[in-house]
Image (cartoon, rainbow, N blue to C red; front, side):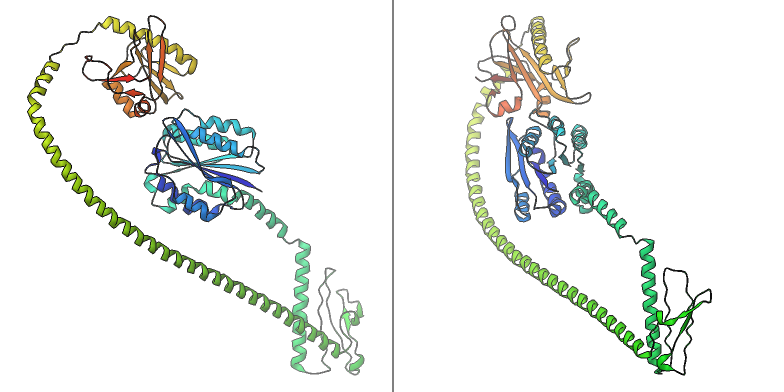
Length: 534
């Protein structure tokens, strides 16, 4: 049975402190169980400003344990978002059309989808290919992420193993958590079936047991008779032979004629006392009996010789394994020497780094002196700054609250219509009946309990690209930076035009939104100004 296995490892910033735990678990518990005669792939994934990046560390094909382990040890430093749906889609596409009995994905992640994908949907689409199996190794997943991972595993007849971060140093706890996946890699179910079949085929039938018992009885009786004959050493002593067959029980009573040793005749009596000629069961003279005894002894010697040969072969095999083990130990010693060499190289690098640090410290001291000089100059400007602050504090802003409310209400109605088309049955307008100070105006629900996106609506009567966030809105944006969106509606009284900022923090980082106004204007306290560029 052939199996394709594709490892998908999350290197987003959710894994920043958890990646070493995943690396150790894979190296200790998973890699030793992999069959490297089957195709195996390794992909790492992240996203930068909503742009997914999937790195094929090992292409889906034949590899070896050394190369695979080395790639796991040298995984990149986690950074960016987590495009799980996109990566699973890529993996499924790579497996499509491959000839294999089982197509297995092992997904390692510590967070939820950040780029708008849905890996449950991707796995659901692949159900028609019954060979697809998705297994998820979670790093401290909770809540919605945990439910999603379990659901995906159930859909594809895979398993979900959630590693507890507090037990990261306990190998027994790690192995216990990963046991369902270990069982799959071991093919435990198929092995049990084979074992049961072998057990059934190996059971002796009653006929075989009876035949075996008869042979043992004959062998024991023949051996005892030979030993008795050799001990007494008399030519006239009759040899008694007991025979057990599957026919009715036989009672054997030999009667020897001592007067004619060379022509002695033995009579055997059945249970019904009917005599028969013993020539059917025993030799006519002692010489034949001795010959039979010698043949039996020779057969025994041959059997013992065969057993000794088997033991010698076993010893040779053991010595060969011991030699292989010693060779492996020698390899480990050489590897240890290489490691010590690497340590010395690292020490040298550390010494060079220390010298660079000392140079930097010298530069820092120089910069500190310059800063002191600047502070001295700045002290002279304090009075002027104080005057400017006093003027700024005395400014009173007058706002037309009714006009602001109308603008806000109209822009929210426009955005609501857009969201209804984009996310049918998932939109919650928090201000629909009454203004709610939640830090956002719309919720896009992922399910009945979880919010996928928070959306703030900003309306403008002109084409200005400057808008502000309240303190509450800005704090919520910082807490949910990948899930916080802003819909800016310009010219709401004419031909409204809506700009969707689907990730405010991402737009700020890539320079599409700047945290300032393009012209002088006064704003109320606890407001943050932003300007849309371009």
